[in-house]
Length: 157
Image 1: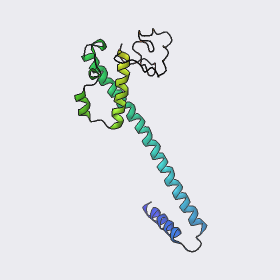
Image 2: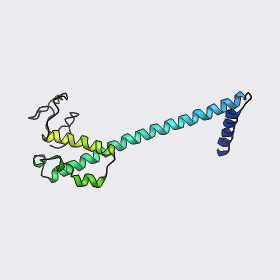
Image 3: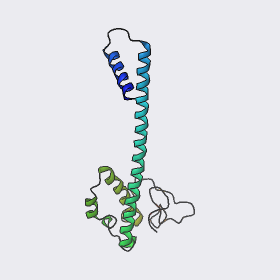
Image 4: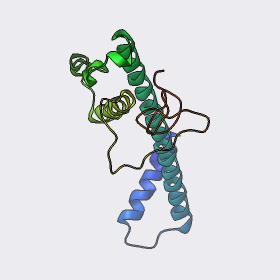
């Protein structure tokens, strides 16, 4: 296989440096090799994109779990008086999250700030509708225990 690849690379070089007409079969072979290389690169890219999506989802799940554990350790959401309760700054510093990880953490902290009433929803943001069959919270919007961003059951109850 390596010899065949080497032979194709030599043929490619001959085509690139040729000053005379090149045999069409050589051109076809080179084209086929290039098309296979492109297909392989596309497959690799798609696999990497899928891994990135899965890792982002895993990161979000882990951070969400850590926040829930911290809320429970504080005695429940009613005892959380600041966002530091959700994710202590010392833990945040110790993790040294990437910019991407910090953005995911900020999204989750915002979600729990909204759920616990530490902050009010932005006046410019559209108000989410309560899920069918669920009682809206006193603040309006998401029902108690629902993610106010997605209206899906989650978080703490």
